[in-house]
Image 1 (cartoon, rainbow, N blue to C red):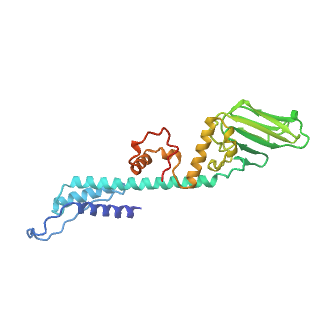
Image 2 (cartoon, rainbow, N blue to C red; image 1 turned 45 degrees about the vertical axis):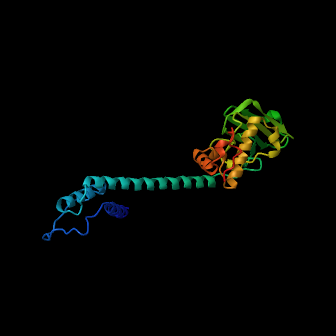
Image 3 (spheres, rainbow, N blue to C red; image 1 turned 90 degrees about the horizontal axis):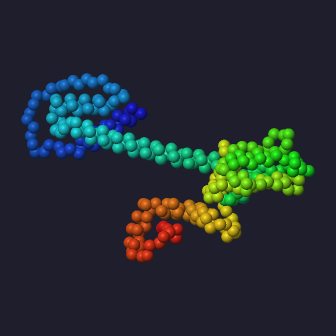
Length: 286
């Protein structure tokens, strides 16, 4: 690491020196007797620039090799070193974030056909409006034997006198008064939880539980007409973004980005002469 820093410093020094005008070649320097000078400075690994500054000061005092202002030269050197360090840090940050995204993709599970997960003792599914939990029970189970507790931030399902089959803090809050459960065929309990936030998918049923890749969640197009206008708009936006990503095109959020807007205006110089459009949802970036 130190060797690399020294080499980079040397390269930066040479680059800076090359920016300064050299004395004209046709000027003859007066002859002077050759003499040797000693320069002794202890290198402090924590402050390599100190060595450079001392060396440049020494050269300016003992030789005319640096026919310029040393402090200005050092400032320029420090400026370039900082720019290089900032560039390296930015690249390291980008790589770290990219690595984290890749690890996140590997950790996330592919949702089942109902946008949830099939667990060992139960399964869960979801739409943008509600979450449905399906729990198999022993045949002949009576409703009075079932324990089903639904709270704003938690849920528990099981049989009386036995450990809970599932229990935990829900991924998001629910509307308790609009949620319910029922027992079908004396062997299957279905729990219907109404979401408070009806705009987003749940990544998991419980906090800390296995998460799904919500980018792969797919609402059924045939049911879009049954949704209220606000929810339908959200679903259509999500479907649009998903298609755009698959085609390698900008999402709705990216289309609204100022940089893309400037690019769009540059590609369509006559756009400003037209009647303004209140929405950019119909603009397709190329």
